[in-house]
Length: 80
Image (cartoon, rainbow, N blue to C red; front, side):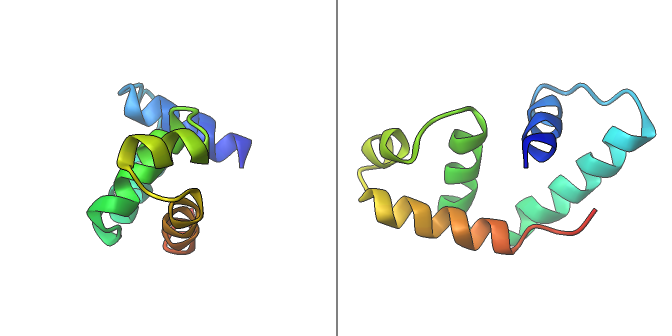
């Protein structure tokens, strides 16, 4: 999970310098296509280090709703 988060942060910053990260980039693109707009927003905010409560406040949702979006997004994550 920490490895996934770190590599995703690298991808968000555009640090694609090797084949290993390129593989993660391609997996991330496939994953992003499978996510709803709300799921994508939650994933981006969570990967930026925000708590579920902060995300809920920003999106004017209940924290349990944000956790549900996160769970659904993670279930759609491709295997790399």
